[in-house]
Image 1 (cartoon, rainbow, N blue to C red):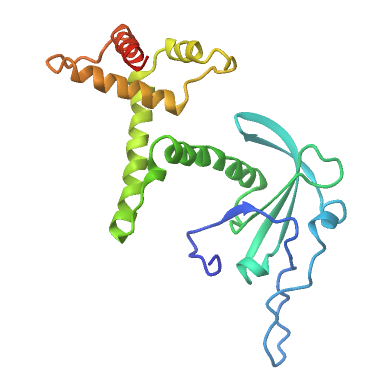
Image 2: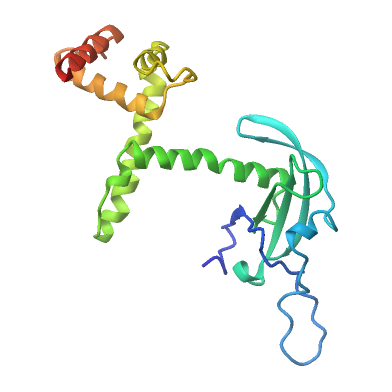
Length: 237
């Protein structure tokens, strides 16, 4: 599936520790017969890292912090996955002294080691977004079978989730939101920022409060939202 990607598409991912890597294909000899598609097989990553790989210090920004790590870049073939397409393998040494901590591979031959590491780290926010959308925003509840429904439901739901977060960030946020949630969950003392669930809850309350006074187009105040929440709690009790 990853072979023959268009020139405008690159693939960056984590490399398996047991990946079989090969040297680039040698130049043609001019002799008759099929030219070689790959070179000699390289040593395993466990032996390659402390052996022939040359590590150099590199500054990267990932997960909100800037640190210095040691990296080694190897241009080779991951033939079993990408076939004869050349790839870059980036070995990242962060805490390890002799081996490596993370091995990355990319088909983007123009990217630097820093760009590849930061690109891979940026996937975390995407994964969290998808997790929140599936578990909190209802995207995972879709049970579509028709092609058009499959193509439309998830994208539309993701867009709605995005609009809800944007609404909260631009209009709905209030410093007391976190304190209110901590009062409801006093055992959760490390909470310092509102979660996506908190954002959705605030939006639902604002919408319901808006229904209670449709003649007033102004958003309800925090006091009005709190009164409405307390009324819900009394009914639930």
